[in-house]
Image (cartoon, rainbow, N blue to C red; front, top):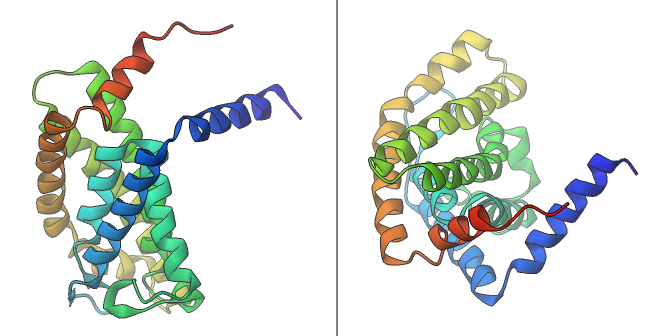
Length: 214
């Protein structure tokens, strides 16, 4: 095993050991939040039947509030439960068959997006004190474009007969709603950080002040 592999493994093991009952409870609560957002009736506005839902709001909020590890775990738990057969995907769908549909790319992107925006949230908390909601909004928007929309378009192309241009144009209709949802996610996240700083803010500050180990 290489030194890099060992370092990554040790980092993951250390992170898991630091999770306590509260962390596991937060993971479960936010997984349920994403599931609840998916069950709100969506509006199918593109030609491939991919609906507009509150899922992206819940996914981004999860990452912004919990940080990278727990955010990825919460949304990953939601995805795994849906693939296992619980009807918690949009429109009450479930099972592995969802991976053969036009929504596959979006669903695969959700845990990745939660992890990435969670990491960006820790950077924002560590380096900023003013206009934090703006930076969190920008973090969520960049993550949404790079991961959710890109993988969503790729899923449409792979699982339908659509061209890349057709898939991209069908995805563009989600952008206005995502901007609004990212604004809401950032504002809510800042409010939660202020009300419950132990969830992420103090954790980030403690890690920033700990001396590096050789």
